[in-house]
Amino acid sequence: MDLFDYIISGARVINPATCLDDVMDIAISGKLIAHMDKTITNNDPRFATTTKIIDASSCLVTPGWVDLHCHFYPDDYYGLMPDDPGVLSGCTSIVDGGSAGMLTYSYFFNRYMDRSKSKTYAFLLHHPIGQFFQEECWKNVFVNAKATAEFVKQTPRIVGLKDKLTADFAWYQGIEGVRRAIDIAHLSEKPYAVHLGTSTHLVTPDKNASADAVENAVRSCTLELLASLRKGDIIFHAFTGKLGGLFTPDGVYDQAVRDALKRGVLLDASLGRANFDLNAYTIAFNRGIIPHIISSDLVQFGLQDIVFNMGAILSRFMGNGLSLSEIIARATLHPAKAVCLAPGTGELYAGGPADITVTSMEEGEFIFTDKMNGTEFTSTHFFRPRISFVDGIPYKVHHHGLSGTSPWTGSILPEEYPFC
Image 1 (cartoon, rainbow, N blue to C red):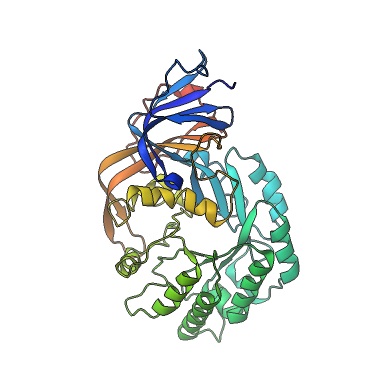
Image 2 (spheres, rainbow, N blue to C red):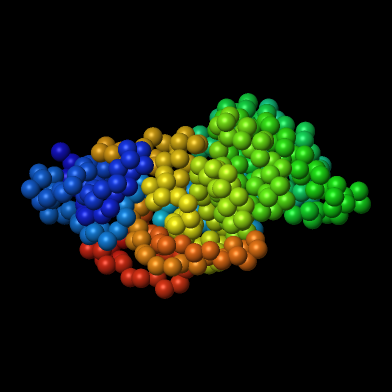
């Protein structure tokens, strides 16, 4: 009989997988959730003198947050150390959004991913070098489709193939580049994820690249993309207001989007610092379209500005069309299922992994700025993550998001938490 190491007591527990939303206690033994009940008392034979009680009566407890799109390859010019978007920001599982390519992934894995306290996964960038290049390198790149597909297929913690459909990609690679990338993902039998949204600026000017010509190239590639994506493929920055964005007042992509959604293509809000446009989101929402997944696209520049952490990202949707349970599902169960993460990820159940996020949820009027056009919009609540449990080990969250962080008053003193 395994004794309880921790009991998270009196929290509001939301588990999207079972539609659970109730006040409960959760007991942890080793790496697993040992028991869940309305009340767990010291009469339970598994309760020990060493069992630590976390008074979470003012908190929300959910499956560990899963950030499907952040960047934690620090050698890249904007990547973070893995635990910054991970346990230090309230996320127990994180997926790198395509920082490394086939030629750089092994170093990335050995140097960073495999040393993280957070559970780490990655999309592989279509470009073999990864993001260690300016976009104009798409001009002359050679991609071995068969080798790339096999690499993605055979590497366990690569969850899919990723591209950035920028102006440079659209201009230099065009529709054939889009088709090749999707073919690689199909061969690998894993999802294809694509960044939408670009400016008309080419990093290296091309004398033949007028703004109109580049815009036409981007629009052609976006339409080809929507026509070719399959069930389970993912569109990052689905609500961007940049060129190539899906939701526009004239509805130019509407039918193509609806056809893609019918095939099972997934929309990830992945806000980032400048990839979420409130107007585009409102247009989509009014047309009955909401995100399947919410991720952060957190990078170095976003840790202290705009993004902060997953809690601040999720807060934006409170009072703006999604219920609390819908929001939690889009940051736990949905991303875990989308890329087939380890069994139990994004869920809470006795015998399952003790990957848990403890969050204080503050009420008020919280103002967020839409960096695309300066529009301000308000949220009714703010999620401030406090503790990330990974395999039963609690980590104190450092990056609370926004200013004025309130003190944590749980029973476990801060110095008792492992720090990364």
